[in-house]
Image 1: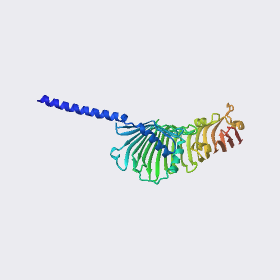
Image 2 (image 1 turned 180 degrees about the horizontal axis):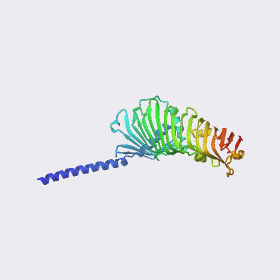
Image 3 (image 1 turned 135 degrees about the vertical axis):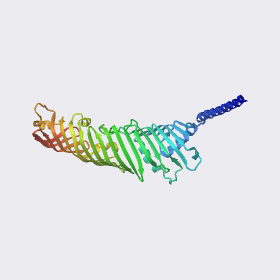
Image 4 (image 1 turned 120 degrees about the horizontal axis):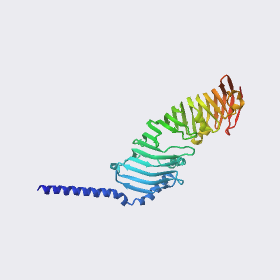
Length: 387
């Protein structure tokens, strides 16, 4: 009798296991049985119409495991692939699929590549969407970016991962963006119409201009429409400290201005990055102001206007005609090509690629020199030195 009962239970559980296995196989096989390829052309046409540029999609599939989702692969937007995505996974809240407001719990975008020209596509969208606004019928809770790449001329940006949480109105509630190499991190927290942003960096090279290596960086920022305020910048690099503030505006052209203070920065390596033939060694301290204005952000460095009062202690001035003009400053045993100094001070005035040293003062032992020197864009020098 006992054996019969046990046998019936075994048979029962075996049937349940078989049924579960069949269901599992069905869930795995169903996405491949549904002919989604017939819908790709329709989706491409709708997307092309909305964006105003060609849109191509390689694959479109439903999956039920680990959770129900729509997988879209091989997305290319624009005639010249201004935007491309390896894969997009859309995970809906199943209980809302037949509701008036549908909820997407998560959208994951793998390996998106965004070129500068993609901004032209995005900025043209409001001109095409003349229909009156309607209450949103789709709510997105979460957007995840994996290994996103931005291609911008003359700017080397790292690949990034992003984790963005959205409100019921599909506006960012919080965001965390990190470079895939872990050297850069940005945290965004909205406050009314503003976005409070904190940027930290560790062993990070500047993406534009000379590749200066920053040991530590922290920037506290506020973003509002076309304006970015940076009231606090602190950084350590080349055994010195840098502090300052900045404001960036791109309402029409790109404009930036701010203040900068430097304390004890070793200038040997930075000057070598800027010029192979002319550089200075020593410890730099000083402060000043700067402004820039250009059509494109990559052009800002070439449009720099700055005045910086500086002092360099215990250094050497290499490769300048200052040595020829004030050779008496050379200490005994030294030959041409460099000037050793106890203090080098003055005002650095920058306009684009032209540098001018005003109120220049050099002291070396009992001797001193003063004057002014211009470093022209072709690296030639012009100036007067009095010893």
